[in-house]
Every structure is written in C-alpha cells, then in structure tokens.
Image 1 (cartoon, rainbow, N blue to C red):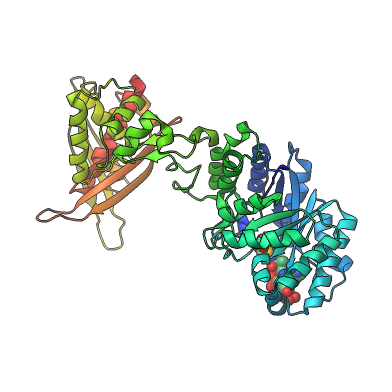
Image 2 (cartoon, rainbow, N blue to C red):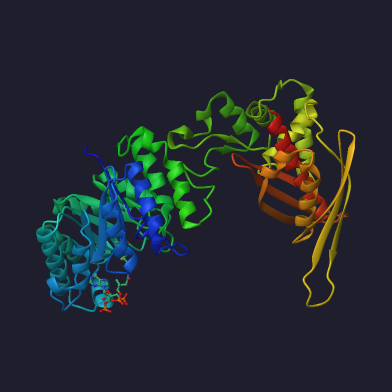
Length: 522
Ligand SMILES: CC(=O)SCCNC(=O)CCNC(=O)[C@H](O)C(C)(C)COP(=O)(O)OP(=O)(O)OC[C@H]1O[C@@H](n2cnc3c(N)ncnc32)[C@H](O)[C@@H]1OP(=O)(O)O
Ligand SMILES: CC(=O)C(=O)O
C-alpha cells in the first residue's frame, strides 16, 4: 500500500466559505503551519481570480517550506479561446507553482447548462488545457468537478472526460463530490468501476452537504485512491469540505495509513486552533478529535469508567492529536467526577470522606438553582476548597452600591459603583465609574482590592455571558452570569446566580479575583 498524499485546500476552497476571508499574511502563515503539519500539497489559491492570490504565489516562492509543494488552482480554458491565449491558463503558468490543479466538467448537465457548449467541445477543453499545462509545467492534477453526479447521470460520458485527462498525461485525477450529495456506498461502487477503466492515480475531493465528506474520503482511500483533498476544520463552500482534522487521525490511527509523523499528528489541535484564530471564527468545541468537548466526560457513569480505564469511553488517546481528557461537573455528576476534579486541582480528598458526598449534594442543589459549573471550573475549585476547609479568605466585602443614571432622553446613561472591603482589619471604601453598572462594579472592586493585592491588575475580563433562567412555580426568574477571566498564562471561568443581575455578576466577579489570589498563593 502506497502512502496517501494529503492535499490541503483551506487557502482556496476554505476561503469560499461564508464569513471566511484571509489576509495575504495569514495565508502565508497558514501555509507554514500546514507545511509543519506534514501536508504534502498546499493549494494556495486561484491566481486567475484576484490580485491577493497572485501575490500569494509571488510571496510563497520566496519563503522556505520544509517539504510541502504549493499548488495553484484554476479551470480548463474558456470555450472558443485558444489554450495558449486563455487568461486563466496564462496566470496559472505565470504563478510558477510546484503543481497546477485545474477543474473541468464531467457532468453532461453542467456542460449543457453551465458552460452551454457541446459535450464534444468540453472534452476538447479538458484535453487541450491539461495537455498544454503538462507540456509547459511540472506536476498537473485534474479535479473532475461533479464526477459522482456526472457518473450517476451519464456514466459513459463522465468516464470519457476522465479518459481525456488521462490521455493528456495528468499526474492524478481527483474525483470530486462537488455538491456533496453522494453517500459512502455510492463512492465505493463508482470508484470501483472507474478503477477498471482508468489507470491514472486517483484522488478524492468531497464536500459535506450530506455530512458524509470525511466518510466519503476515507471510503475512497479504502478503495485505493492516493490523494485526499480537504481543509482544516472542514472550512469550505456551503457546508464545507472534508475535514482534514478528522481525516488525518482516521487514516493514521485507524486505517494504519501513515501520512504524517506522530509528532506532527500531536500538533493537530494546535493547527486547528491556529486556523480558527486567523480566520476569526470561534473554535467548534464539538469538533471530532480536536474540539475541547471531543474527550470531555460529563455523565457520572462515564467518568467512573474512564478513571478506571480511559478506553471505556474514548475511541482513542486524545494526546495523540494534542487534545486532552476533561471531566465536567454538573448535576449529572457522581462521586467519580468530584474525585477526578480533586485530582486535577491537587486537592486531598478520599471518595469515602463524607465531604465528597457533601460537595456532590451541594453541586446538585446549586445546579437546581441555576448554577452551571461546566464552564466555571474556578468557581467549582473554590467551592471544593471551602468544603475542605482549605479556602483562605483574602478579603471580606462589607457592601456595595451601584447607581445607574440617565439625565435626559438624548443623554448616555452613566454608572457608578461604590464598595467597602475589609482586608486584614483594614477597611477600604472606593468608588469607580464604568460603561455600565457591571463594569462600574468590576472597576470599583478591583480598585479597592488592588491596593492590597497589586497582582490583581493582571486579571482581564475576557467574556461575560448572561442567561435569564425561567421562573419556577411561585418563584421569580433568576439570572446566571458566566465570566471568563484570564492573565498572561491562564484562563478561568466563574459563575454567579441571583434574581438580581448585578448580584449575579458580583458573585462571578468576586470568584474570579478570589481564584486568582489562590493561584498566586499556590
Ligand atoms: C467547484 C469549485 O469550487 S470551482 C471554484 C469556484 N471558485 C470560484 O469561483 C472563486 C474564484 N472565481 C472568480 O474569481 C471568478 O468567478 C472568475 C475570475 C474565475 C471568473 O469570473 P468571470 O469571468 O467574471 O465569470 P463568472 O464568474 O461570472 O462565470 C464563470 C465563467 O467561467 C466559465 N467556467 C466555469 N467552469 C469552467 C470550466 N471548468 N472551464 C472553463 N470555463 C468555465 C463559465 O462558463 C463562465 O464563463 P462565461 O460567462 O463566459 O460562460
Ligand atoms: C474542484 C472543487 O472544488 C470541487 O469540485 O468541489
């Protein structure tokens, strides 16, 4: 079995996704990251499309990649234009990439409707373009657009288009599920037939419109294709492309088809996050393999078992792709969740200690009141410390007051907070303004406490989420505030619940600063 080659099209098809647009500098950075990951081919863009993509090929030719080849993308020549005069073909050659990939039509319907030319003329477009490129450049790949749909509509014609590409001597023919509607068993059947009629090495390019892009890619490899196209995080037109963050570990760990080194595989989560960051898209926590929830265990029964042997509820070791096992705390927890957290927080706790049950009961009762500890590990750590008697009281809040004032219809409201704290027998009374009542309160608390603990200046409020919880029978609705804070090294989550939004925010803010002080002491 030969090595399967990975062909990444994040920088081309990935940018065809809604909301994704990469700066030139970001495309170069991502290319380096993909090279480090061990991707063999990086499709950088369509130089015939826009100046940024032209600049990419200029820029990347000056950079030193470790091993990856850079591919430029384009289409077959336009109808009624001689290949040597075709602008798209000329820009592909002018870009001087290591590889040129062009797409052509294989579906008779598309030839008639999209190109509006005869079926014969389309075969000429394919042959002319590939033959010309093969004679004037190095490695040339052919993306057989809509191949599976084309085959289902008119198998004879679809295969004829591949034969035209083969006759031109292309290095690989990539069968594309462009509309993403093909199912894995169809991929197997169709590739099986193509293999009896085409001897050029085959590849697969699948889209995710039926949620089968990764399955189709793996099925194609199982059938013997030698090139897999996809994108990091599955970015791509409409529902996206086959996700390389799932394909790579599946090939490597499950199908035993080595495509990158073990060290490179351990960088997978890092690469996924890097691409999200540069694309300015929040990471999908539920993403298979690399998402933060991919190995996060919530149900008590699951946690109990993974603590005994992780394989009971994990399909693979998360560390192999740079991920990690996480235990979540909620009202679905059992003693095992509490014990796992105690271990994580370095707290001495015995599962038979009545405190363990006390903590568990406390969580369930608090979650019933609206608390949610899943995203608030820091609040949970403080709760455990209080239960174990190891919580140090760094400060005491004597009271606070928040004023919100609007002095006219066209005036912006102003907010001011005052707070009284006691630290080691000294009382501090401080006031501060803010852009809103919560911000004013946050400023006042910090101003007061920073006098005693200057390191609290490092703490930044990174995220603030409010959820109004529906009222139960005979009770007022309450508010849950989840805060994410961070310093130069860490991020942590805290939670507060109250029927007053300011009070809920206050509880979460206080926990955040209290947590930081405990960490400083440790
Ligand atoms: C399956 C895929 O993902 S393919 C990649 C799709 N990606 C993109 O389209 C992004 C980049 N595209 C672009 O920047 C522009 O569409 C360009 C520069 C390529 C073309 O722009 P325009 O010349 O203004 O044409 P427009 O986008 O309106 O229409 C596409 C043209 O390409 C032609 N065309 C489409 N596919 C092919 C093909 N495989 N071979 C030759 N010509 C093709 C169409 O017939 C149409 O030409 P016509 O109007 O002369 O009939
Ligand atoms: C080539 C390509 O991007 C497709 O067929 O989807």
